[in-house]
Length: 464
Image (cartoon, rainbow, N blue to C red; front, side):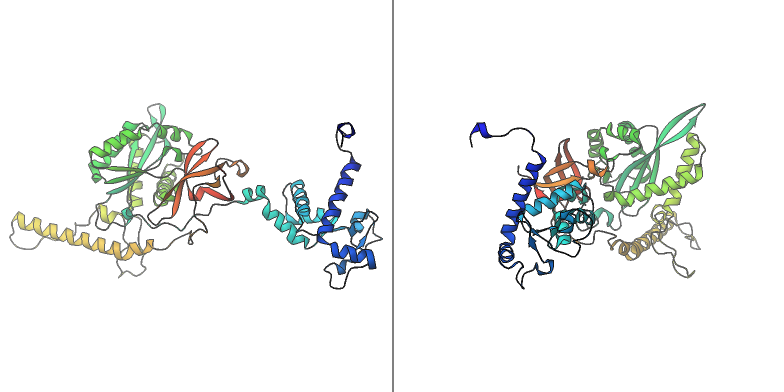
C-alpha cells in the first residue's frame, strides 16, 4: 500500500465493527470449520455436532449465530441471535478479558450477563471463571500469605532448671500520664518476660533514651540476676498510633546495648521487623498488664509513687496466674504459677526439736528448699511443657517455600490493600528445620526484612 493511500485519524464506528466481524469470522473458521461447511450445504449441523441444540445458522455477514426460541422477543439482533464462540480460541479469551476489565473486575455472574447480551460462549460460565482466575490484577488483589508450618519452640523456652529471667524478652508500652506537682508528664514501662517460666518484671522509665533502657536493665540484673540472652523488637516494629513510642525506640543506640551486654556476657537478639506473631508469648502479657492498669486507674492520673505501686501489684497479679490446669478437687495440687519460681514457699519449713548448730539448721533448710525447687521443676516438665505441644495455627507446610526471585505483595497494615507494595525476594533465612520464615524483599521504597506471614507470593517470577 502506498503512503498516499493510507488513512490517518481516529477509527470510525463502522471501521471498528468491520474489523470485529473479520476477527469473529476468523475465530469461527478456526474452531467451527466443519459446522460452517455443514450449514452452508445442508442448512444445519451434523447430528454429532456439539452445536446441534443451538440450531445455528449463517447470517448475511457469514457469522454463525444461535437460532433459539426468542426470535420474536424485543431487542436487537445480537440479543435474539447471539454469536457463537469457542473459549479456547485466543481472540475469544481476549474478548472475555476485555469484558472482565470493563466490568471493573467484578464478579463472574456480572461478566457472564454482559457477554450473553451479544455472544453465546460454549461453556460460558466456566470460560468466565477461567478468565477471572487468569486476571493478574485479581490475583494480586486476592493474594494471601501462605506461612509455613508453625515453627518449633526455641530451646530458650524449654530450658529445664534454669534461673528465672535467664532468657528474657524486653518490650515497652505507654506512655502513661502522671502528675508531677501541677504539671503532667509521660512515663513508659519496660516489661521483661522470662521465656521459660513466663514470669514478668516491670520497671518504670521516664523516657526511652538508650541510658534509660540500660538503667532499667541494670535494675533487672540487680533484682533478678543477669540474663544470658535478651530478645528485643527492631525499632521498625513500633508502628501504628503510638508514633512517639516508635520514634523514641528508633533513637535507641543498638550498638551501645550490644556493647553493654557483651561486657556482662549477655547476648542481645533482635527479632524480624513487623512480626508480632514471633513474640506472641510476651505480647499477651503486655495486654494483661495494660488491662490491669486500665481497670485500676480508669480516668485517674497517678503520681510516680502511685504508679510504681500499681505496677508492682500488676506484676504480682500476672505472676500469680496459673500455668497449668486449675483443679476443682481440693485434694489435688494447686496449679503451677510463675510466682512458684520467683517466691519459693519455705515459710512452712519447721525447725526440728532439739539442740542443733547453725550449720546443721542451714544445711537442713538448704536441702529442704532444694527439694521443693526440684518438685516445682518436675511439675513444670510434667504439667506445663505438654501444654506447649499443640500448634494453634499453620498446621501444614506451604505448597512451595519462599525463594529468591519470587515476586510478592508485601502486607502493610497501615495501607489499603490496593496500595500494598510489590517486591522481589533477594534473600531468604531458613530456620533450623530449613523452613523459610523470614526474607529480605526489594521494593521501590528500599530493602526490607519481613516474615513469611506478611508476604503474598504471586504466580509470576522476576525476569531480572
